Length: 113
Image (cartoon, rainbow, N blue to C red; front, side, top):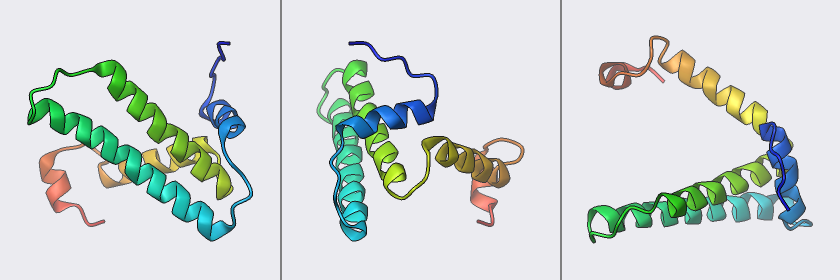
């Protein structure tokens, strides 16, 4: 069954259909933080295999790993009471403040935050 995603919050709501519940607050933070680290590690390992082991680049598998990471971000945000669009908006504001004229290596080296 195909589901249409129209907003990040719509995506987040659909993610909640496939998550576990009933964890206390400390377990929620621990579980989602470790899961995110694990998924990021899987993506890093896939990249390592391309550059060091000579494996072919597989964009479909990369997209799957990115989707897993996004799923965990969505459920973690939900469990701390924040919608995914707010997470995205705050990140854009932070980056815009950090790099008001766009990213450059010089701006990165000399940034204050």
